[in-house]
Image (cartoon, rainbow, N blue to C red; front, side):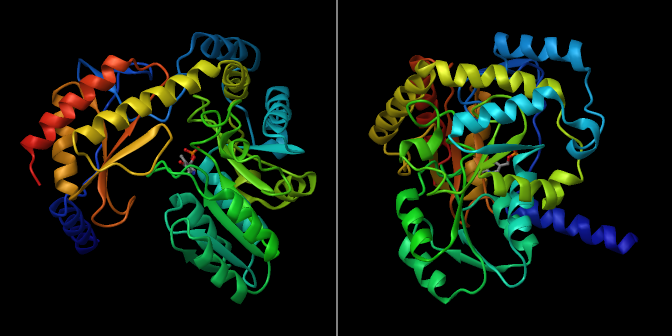
Length: 390
Ligand SMILES: *Cc1c(COP(=O)(O)O)cnc(C)c1O
């Protein structure tokens, strides 16, 4: 026992030496563009609450009213006695919102991805994953036991080579908006490759839904793709929607299959009904308030222009995720700490979350930011990076 733990201590030291040690900051305020950390107010540039709905008064009051009606806990899994009217209505509304036959709620996006891929594939099948897919998609593919093929990022030609050699059921899995880079998957070309090779296409649009598309329908709306093109759509509710949870949308037969077979659906407690009610309220705002998406676009454009002028290395992102590539992990952390001292919270993202040598500051915007805050961030970034020279 003692020696096993001393090995863990050694491992922690190795992580520290590589500049990869992770720790939490304790937040003492609601989510929003201003956070209280250690008694100080800082401007938040790292949240996924893109539309500013996590503490929206209408969403908060819907949550409170639902707690008065349903209480806090959901009591059991959906298939036992935890599936409330609130869950059911939200599923129907999400199906309409995404233009799909049905939607099924999961407790988290991580679980949705594990559950779907494992329910659809077994040992004789093959899963194809973009190299930069979110960890939950990679883990889902591994857990399914299917043959596992990673293709070069957004490279449909490379994917096609793998597809031609594959056996069994074929499932192509990709982020829609890539979570750490902010770029868009080439969904139209992927949908064609799927059709040509008799494969399913699954898109995880955690960072696109609510945020991209004229009506917030995500990357699939942006690209005009239907359920026929993308039979499996995954969305999360803890990002653009500002609440918590996730869903899969698709055909009736897909959803019924998941209810029978997805273990992360069957063997877990339903999310609280009040969270579902709060999400129904946020969905209405997502649909109605285009200004939030327009504002995000304007903020990201302003940031890109300014960052380009200052000579920062940006990625080809037109989303609310605007990473600045730093390279070295320790340097990314040092800059992030400098920014925090100056009153800006920007997270340093390091391997293994991103490829080796590509540590970055992941700047994200909220519809609640003001343009002057973007300018202040750019100014502070300029000073912090000069102080921590490469
Ligand atoms: C956040 C995220 C998830 C996980 O969703 P949770 O609800 O937070 O578990 C899955 N996929 C992508 C691309 C994500 O960014």
